Length: 467
Ligand code: DHB
Ligand code: FE
Image (cartoon, rainbow, N blue to C red; front, side):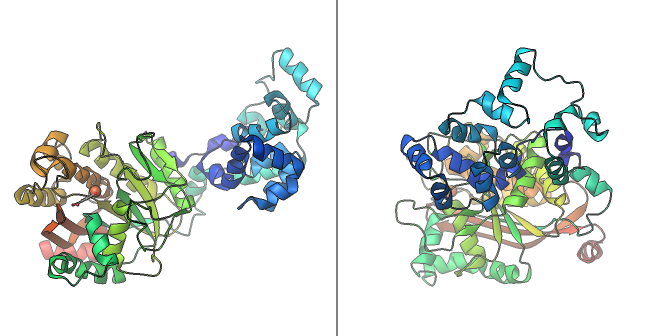
């Protein structure tokens, strides 16, 4: 729970711009960014209200804060000073004028204070705020102080310890592993699933769709790799967590797949970001991103042809395109940290982790078409039975044994690391296993693991059966 400590909220007269604030202020901050263009500044200055009204997603409180020139209110509504500075500059305000305007001091008095050494730390610590003697609150109205304190006076850690999180917490109910070959999506979109070549592939997912009907989660944490779609060579992040509200299906050169849009879970994703980054996983967070076959094909395989995806999806991208790519061991550790992150979210959600990509395939060069059935099947065995050991396999072995694109398999360790047998709080069971060659250039591998917390009925049944 220490990961969720938000004690920083107690620092008097201070708003920390965390993922939660960012989600709250998303449209306000993006509006500010529009003022980096001269033509937009002109439009804004010609009619502030009209411009604000035309900006989608801004709340009335956010608009009013700007119209009132009330930066404290704008911060409360999720604004961040570096974004707001574009708005301030548009109105001819410097950083000093903006900062000063939030203190309740006159512009002159603030400048004077800075000339005399700045604001003193004395009287401006957390203890001063708690004792009601924080000097920083002098310039703020009682209403503002109350609003700031109401935000989160205790922090999640304290709240969890005090036991009023009676609603329960999120639980990982299972893991799904599957290849994500784009031609599988095309076969579905073009109505070819009954052709013998493709039927042999889809037959392996009949069980999965029926199982999914019975075991539908609220949220899928979907680990995949973007294939030069959202991230080209201008930006190469290793791990990307989607904290946005929605993700359209990308046009990969043959038009966007005719599948529903993907709904995210910004609040849950912000919580996961907080926990993982506190656990030293330096993630890139993305609010706007199109998603490619790596994400949409697994959804199609597991849910079939639907009007609307029946779950929310938190996308998680891993760079496996440009070396250096992360190791299996790093991904396995990330999965373990992910388990902590998910299970500490105080809403009773059922969550599945999906690992996608693989199995053996090589899409390039004279060795294209490489398939290694024996290696793939041993990978599946070891992933189930001894994932910690399997995770130490070096990149070279994937490339040599499973083809250059077989490296996608490192992503499976994120899902595997998040299972309860890894931290010793439960056991797993193999609900389904499927292997088939080929789909396009690839060996298709698919596993469903269910997760049983110790003491659960299913765990006891498994124990009895194996005794
Ligand atoms: C193929 C497989 C992939 O995983 C991918 O990302 C692209 C193509 C294929 O087998 O054709
Ligand atoms: Fe791929």
